[in-house]
Each structure stands twice: as C-alpha cells, then as structure tokens.
Image (cartoon, rainbow, N blue to C red; front, side):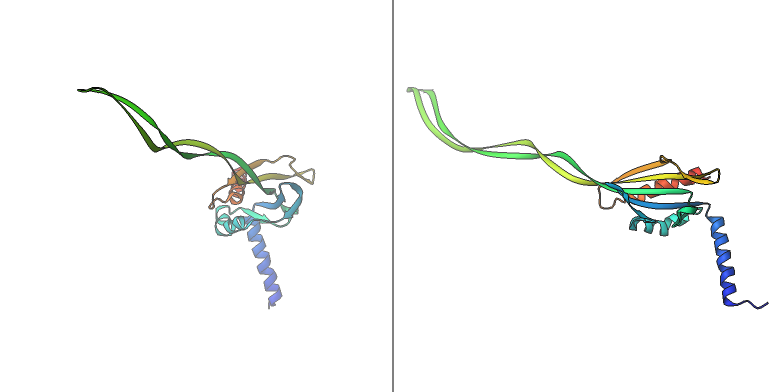
Length: 195
C-alpha cells in the first residue's frame, strides 16, 4: 500500500499526539492579570523569565505537566499578578557638626614671688558626631501566584472558588525572579498532588 505525504503526516501527527497525551497527564492554563484591575487579564501569558525557565528546565523537571492554551482541556488554572509596593523606612546616617570655640582663660599660680594671676584667650573648633534618622522610600515588586483546580462534577467542569495553592515572592534584588519562583512553586504543588 502506497502512502501519500498527507497520510504520513497524519500518522506522524496522531503518533505525536498519542505520545504527548501519554506523557502529559496534567494540563495547566495560564492567566496573567493586573493587580489593580483583576478583570484586565491576558490569557496564556507567561513572562519571559517563566517561559525561558519552562523551555530550559521546567519541561524536563515536570515531564507529566503541560502548559496548554486551551482552557477546555486544562486540569489547573495558574493565575499570576505583579504588584509594586512602596516601602517607607528610615536609614541612620552619621551627622558631624563643627563649631567654633573661643573664650578667655584665667589662671593663678603661686611662685616664689607670691600669687601670680594670668589671663589668656583661646580659639579652636569642636567636632561632634551623632546619628540622624532620614526618611527613605523604595519600591518592591511582589508577585502572587494562585492555583485553581478544575474538576468534572456530573459531566460539568467546575473551577474551584478558592485557590488550592498560593505563593508570593518579592523581587528586590536585580537577580531575583519572583514571577518564575511562584510558577515553579505551583508546578511543584501539582507534581506532589498528582503522584
């Protein structure tokens, strides 16, 4: 039997889907939303950090979990958001003050000739160091990740009303990747739950 390229492509696609369905036991749909406006959602959006980590490490570490762009086949919804918050604090800094000093000095001394009184003047500076608290403000990025489970009850799919898992990380340092960290935390939870 001679097979056309289209038939071969269909056989290859069917084999690939069967393999990936066997490997992918849990599907996750991703939603990114704005903290101050939860209705402003971007469906199927991973950040660059999340996507790069997923392609380099995540697919290997979580072989039975797939990221899907179809919410109808998802087992979980991973919802994440970024929030910048101003932190107000004080920092202690040394404060040095220099003041000019001058005055008159009176002195007496007893010698062989009797009591001698002397008067003199002085000029100089005094340096004093104290600590001073100065108000300081900086912004910190917080990223929250929320995992919702989708279950089928009496033939209908339902999303859990409350998250089954949540994670929050803050990114203060340049090398911190809070959006990746909440994503990894959620996938670890799924892996533990689906063993």
